[in-house]
Image 1 (cartoon, rainbow, N blue to C red):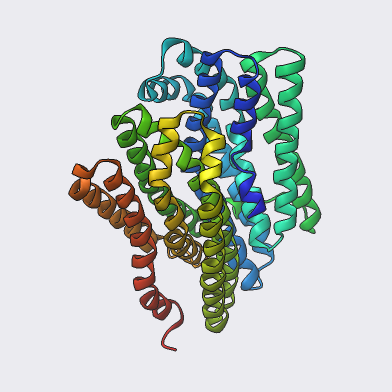
Image 2: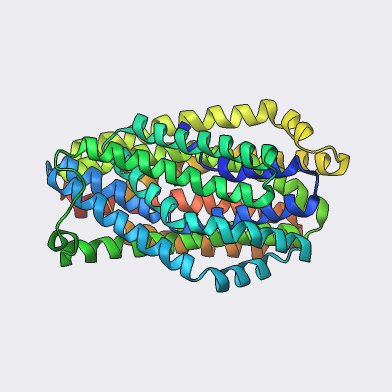
Length: 420
């Protein structure tokens, strides 16, 4: 959970440092580019998820030699994807910034940040693999150490380049690249210490046909699932923008609460991926069922804590985050949806982790697409109610994700372990 909460810090630190320069266009450009990178890298989050699942399953099956294969194959795949993003940076930049629709000055600043930070792509995606590999072995403290190293480096280099050496927006982008490089160096060093034979791997083992095909199939399904999830968030933000500046600003304030609670609850998904992946690898039905019960029970407890915190401190946090009376009023009107959301979201996050750990990813993909359909149908049915209908649709999406996966769970258990 703590490691996850550090995830959005690179964009936040860059935005804060550039904001100190006092130029609105630079601040807007970094903010816009940070959102682009958050979504772009999120789309390839399957690298962390699949690596975590394969690592936990290999550990549960007692196949320690496979840990080296999972890591090196994941790093090779991450490097290939990151390199493709660098090669395609010009068309990507054109499409993405056109879609964002910023002013000329903001877009120019965003492109300047994008063209430098895009070089961090292979490093950032490789870090996903390393983090998944460490968490898959239940070495969450080491994963946290890598995340802390990335973020401390980012803060230090950003402050040095932007506020001391006056490198401006380029300095913030360079800091992100340096931070990801430091994280990867540390992660690879830890991996070499944990693997008795190091991380070198023969070409034959790396390109084993069955292993590569399984990795590609799992990654494909998780990527499609993630694309459907991103579609929900992009649609939600687009509809909020169409409702006017006040509604857009109010939703933006509340989205910060959702983001923090989502990263917090996603820690449960990471735990579920490791525990359930290990149980699947060991073919231990009792351990798998026990892990599921633990994740759901503790998850609901954490969600109650998050909801209670938002109910108690949400109004005060809204006051801190915006000085506009109109935005404050609108945000307080819709705060109840954010307070309720963790109670529904926890089941979506928990079952996501359970399904990924067990590599039931084809079913997860299909159920996420169905949840997207439920979200759109709910919005369409309630569109006349404006932003209220949009928030109801968002909650319906959370409920559908957790509910559909919960209903499908018994059949998948039977298919994986046989009758109880």
